[in-house]
Amino acid sequence: MNDDSAIEALSALAHEDRLAAFRLLVRVGPDGMPSGEIAEALSIPPTRMSFHLSALERAGLLRSWRAGRRILYAASYADMRSLLVFLTEDCCSGKPEICGDLSQIAFQCEPETCR
Image 1 (cartoon, helix red, strand yellow):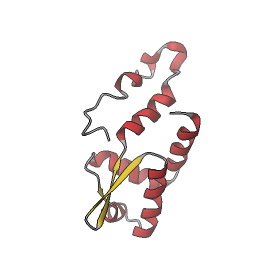
Image 2 (cartoon, rainbow, N blue to C red):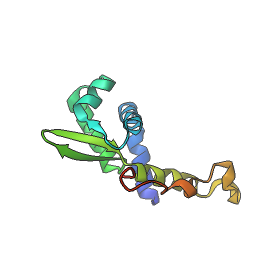
Image 3 (tube, one colour):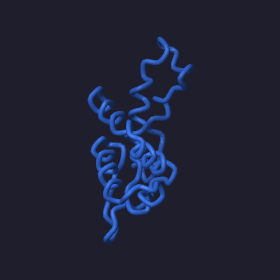
Image 4 (tube, rainbow, N blue to C red):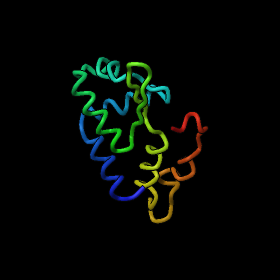
């Protein structure tokens, strides 16, 4: 993670609809959900939701794939962890225990759940 990618990710999250979608997808898990269901769950028109999901995907916070006629979206947990580590890597003058040592958990996940 570098400054530019962190800024892009944080900028993508700096919108009410995108933040709500990201938080929903984090709760849903790695199997994700279709864009239409995300829009419905958040009471956002589908075309507007597609725009927001694309922005989150470009920022590296979501991944998408086609399943038949539907496009599914899921949080990119590895990229989310990388952002958290980047934000806290210099925490507290060398006392990472104050922030919690996120670098220790950054990549602790099974390959099938760490997409």
